[in-house]
Length: 240
Image 1 (tube, rainbow, N blue to C red):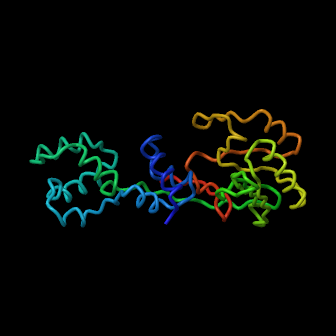
Image 2: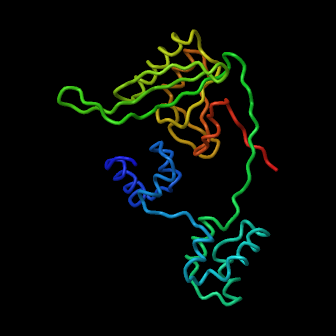
Image 3: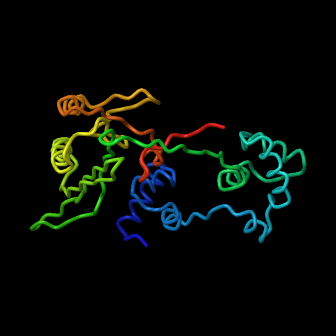
């Protein structure tokens, strides 16, 4: 279980910042189940639902039938259809049921695109809590660069995540790995991406100048798309 500090941060992000469970999980680099346990959120389970009296219980088979034919149906429309058949509950019950399990999740497949030697690397920060230096407590971070083809790795612990430290770590990584990859992918780090609107990305001007001088092309992953930076290199979704 996570410590009290992380638990407090989870509750703050959920109740104050109104972040979703998956977003908290990604931000803090912990599993969604841990986040749910801290927030005392239970996964929706139709079997568990049927173990106790519920206004929705008799309509679960009907809901499953409707959403299988119309997976994009809204909770409001579904609630109207159920009320026509005798449902007396609120739309919130229906919305929760859809969100937590009764709506079938869209299927996505991913094609593995292999990269050539020296073509691509992946960069990110890792958080390692606090470290005490003298009477001061500092945040400990780890810069990591991984080559997509060879899986060669460079890691450097740092006491900040400033743009200056970020660039310096890149230079150390290039020296250690013996060259500069043609492209480096990032997970929308503030040192790299100022803002984005869909596929329109505004990169940090200082970092663009740095990348141009070093000779690599920065590339930003889509938000909440961890599959785009996996151990087996870069994945792209296939549509059915």
